[in-house]
Image 1 (cartoon, rainbow, N blue to C red):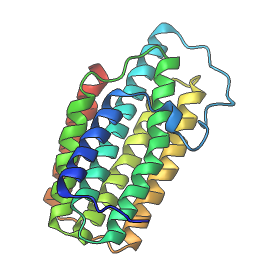
Image 2: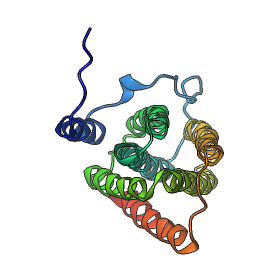
Image 3: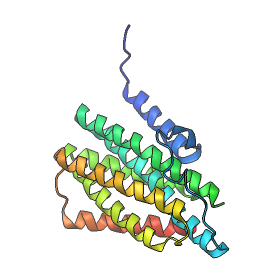
Image 4: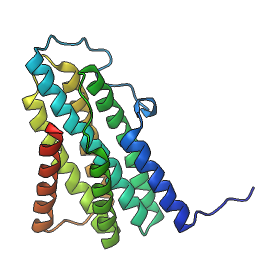
Length: 215
């Protein structure tokens, strides 16, 4: 059987399809693992608590949209087939998080961020820029990103209403997975990023999370 090699145009069209599917299509069917919240009972939330939990989970859902784009951008620019495969593998694992957050948003009657396509495009560009710098820098970017994501998730768990154990269970598993992804990138040879780059990453993350909380 002849294996067809993908041209540059093929890869661009594939990335465009992935962007549309991630930003607009339901991802619930794509989860490989059941939601950590599946076996838990819904807590009794006041309307204010439901709104707050929903806004926090909307931010996390937007973050998972961005995570898909970051990995895809890095994989697109990766020089090594091994690094490209690692990025694709991590992106596939992140699909679970996207599906879990999407399901939780529905349960909380909260819409996803209206700016999800923007988060995807911007994050893809950032991921591609990191990949362009080189594989070690790209892996270092993953390691630093995941460190910041873990800190972000810890902050959200502290803000969640105490009764919302379903959202908390999702964020706990996401935190475990993100820490694993970051450690894997560091073991693979990720370079330490300069302080200005790390600060810029925090700034862009703050802009996205602050905006997605409301929109």
